[in-house]
Length: 457
Image 1 (cartoon, rainbow, N blue to C red):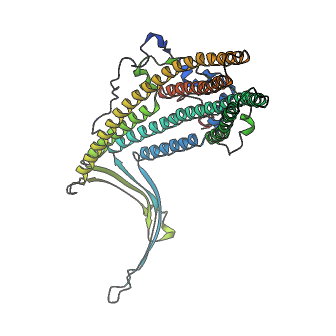
Image 2 (image 1 turned 180 degrees about the horizontal axis):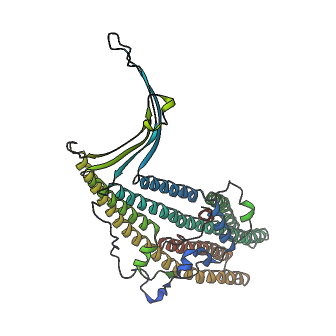
Image 3 (image 1 turned 180 degrees about the vertical axis):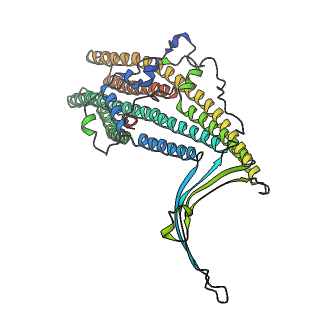
């Protein structure tokens, strides 16, 4: 076969990750089974249930399956080109010469029935190279399905965490609102009794109204997150309202697990395998383009019956056969074949550069995701300690107020700081889990998940 043979050449990658080299990061290698269905490590049954529904109903997965079917059909059609074409022909023709002045008696019928076959011998590998490219395209379609799984699992987990986070923020907001309303009632009582000031009442009321104003925004965002989840699982709006209406904690990031080396990440990511398969297809098409310079050799044969009398068509005298061979050598095509070769070479070079770019982007995505996750974990732990201190500060400010050591404004300031700290901690917990999801996605997590759609296929 003409043209270059494709040989997989693993890309050059660093020996270790830049992120997490500090011993305090406490990173460990991830179990491949954990990477397959990584969302189960969060230990949330609601998330597990939604993943099952999405695997059965997500439309992106169904679209990816139809593309696999298209690629498989294209490969079958390309493979069929390697074999002879056999046709059954039945024909009847009426010949006559109606022009005046010619010899009469040229009117007759002609009947034929038989099989004819044509086979183009793929002597220089033109069709076989095309079959190689079609096989690589089919592999790429399979990887597109796995990439859809990676994207689906990550997006659904992020949406679910966002939904639970907004629920959690509303609980915190309403809890703080109840405390602030109690404080407002107390300041109004003190003001009526002449102990407090009107400034303290106005300040307490403003704090209460500011907190109340947060609820409509949180509720709207929660509905938006729920509707996005419904799209991912392939459901109509409102169908998951009852299922997710119950309160649930935000799934916390379970641990610091990564693949041991960047090279292992390259092997697990479907997008990189897609780029590599496209490079293989482009390389194969180079050989097909080069083969156009060489002769096309075909064999043909016919076996059947021919006669001018329909009644005698199947008699031995009507039996006929023929065989032939043809060679077609391009001589003058004004550079069309050479232009096709140049185009194939340029596309192969483009595919090679696209593969190299995909490798760099994969390493960058993983490094960035790991850095964000590790730093958010530090931030979350710091905020956890800060919220504990803020709650103690509120308790102490209330005690000191009753003792007359501080004004009521100090109590209001402590409550405001506590609310801000609790909201920030809730956001950080959700962000840490979301960042870990980004790490799992960068590692190709979920690519080999058992989809109910693929099982039915």
